Length: 106
Image (cartoon, rainbow, N blue to C red):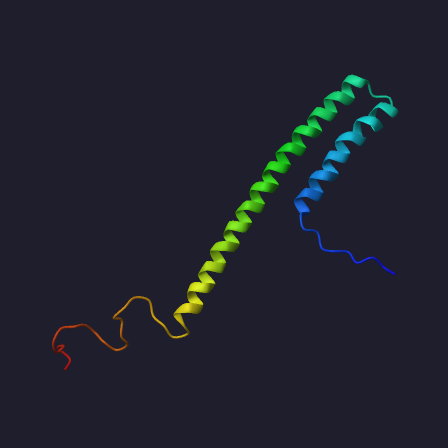
């Protein structure tokens, strides 16, 4: 029986987890292939700094996306409440040129 896969609920978290995994794997590979422990440590610190910065940017982007979606939802709700042919503002009438008397063209 195939397992049912649910959609990823946190794609940014997946990216950060893979980045953290690479922060652990890269120094090991560097040491195995002859790089000094000091060089591997510097590479680890650099990768950790880049990973942290990317995590902050991803979280900020997600938060901005959620707030933009909320604004769009509010706009759609307000438009639906106004109705199809509704106009903005009270007292606006079609064909009414003003409250004054007769125009020079009458």
